[in-house]
Amino acid sequence: MASIRKRGSSYHAQVRKIGFPAITKSFKNLALAKQWARNTESDLERHLSVTVPTSLTVSDVLERFEKEVMPQHKGARQERYKANTIQRLMPSIRLSILSTAHIREYRDLRLKTVAPSTVGRELAVLRGAINYGIKEWGINLQNNPVSMVSLPKVGRGRDRRLEQGEEEKLLSVSGELKRIMIVALETGMRRGEILNIKKSHIDFNRQTLLIPLTKTDTPRTIPLSSGL
Image 1 (cartoon, one colour):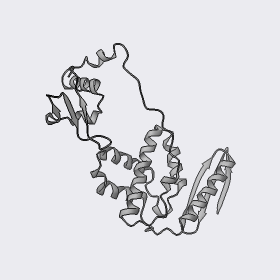
Image 2 (cartoon, rainbow, N blue to C red):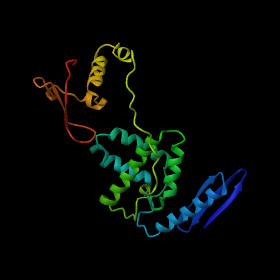
Image 3 (cartoon, helix red, strand yellow):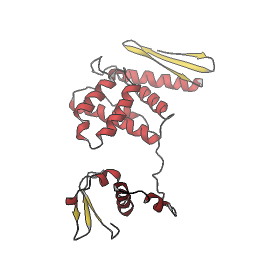
Image 4 (cartoon, rainbow, N blue to C red):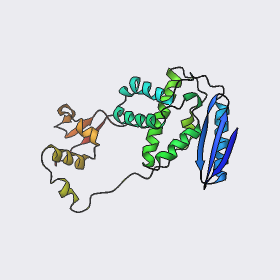
């Protein structure tokens, strides 16, 4: 059952259910506290029939996902960093009681310090790890609570173009960095794509460059200008 107490200017809500640790959270007004308590109790009810080892934590799932699955991903380094952030902030939450309330609390906490896009990518890693565990490791969850929480809205992508004099400033550097800048300006390629360019990818007769590994896993060929 849920209990709500006023402490100073805030309301302290706590939900208790036999077989589960108490879950608490503070709110600025009573209405939010009551709504959170109802949602949390509902989450716990839905998880009563979940068959998951009681000792298995969110951190355990992410650690195994990091070792067995992430190395196969091109963005493994970035995924590992995001997983470590989640493990630091959710170190001991058992998977058997992980609820949408936990995910919402994590989302709201992170939004105080990082951009919505960052929070979205972090939760995507957690969602992927749990889904993989359900499909491949026999974790018997009725649903993935991460998929049931609204992700923060991400702003429009940047479409800013160089202003007068900025290109000259960029190209004022020397050496390899200048060559990278020129390729980026002429082709619009991503940093990772530029750093993975090999001589065998260039067709000098046709003045084209093959990009075999892309963010979308679809190879593409781009024309090379005379400036290159």
